[in-house]
Image (cartoon, rainbow, N blue to C red):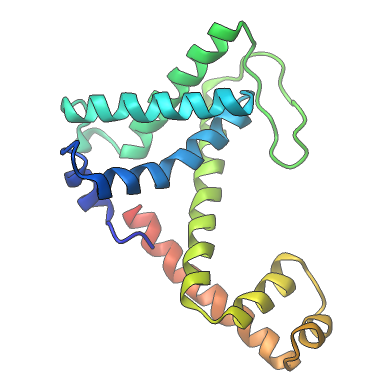
Amino acid sequence: MSSITHTALLVGLQSSSNDEVWSDFYTRYQPLLVAVGRRLGLAEQDALDAAQETLLSFAEGYRKGKYDRSKGRLRTWLFGIAVKKIRDIQRRNGKNHAVVEPVDKTRVLSAAPDDHSISEVWESEWERRLLQVCMENVCRHMEVSTVQAFELFVLKEWPADRVASHLGVSRNAVFKAKRRVLSRMRETYKYLQANW
């Protein structure tokens, strides 16, 4: 987990010279913003540009006091900025908006998606990013063999016997690794939902 809680992050962002906080902010949100841009039909470089423009616009607005925590969550405000920047780039490029499915990268909408579709993309990518951060945290704090057993058994869907043979552990150890990793991920996920 990030060493900076959500509240501390918001306080720290008020100073443009707080490099640790701004680095954490960038690390948290840049991959999410790029993924959303890609899902909304931007090419890789355009998605990177939209993310950068979003983060810069956010920083400027935040330092000017435009974010009011009592009126909504930071992620909602960030979402609004991101959508505006993505649409600006699409207009500059003269392209239609399109939602791209992450699984097979095929375009499912060739016309401009409605606000609900865009919100679904944002929530989907937000959830994906939280799960990724959870897994990264678990990997840092658990034994390598436990994480490997989990990845092979759960993520790659190898049979337990194959995982056990491959890693030189018992079948029971594979099931135990799954339980331990999932338990840690649930704890981490709950924490991140409240603090990220």
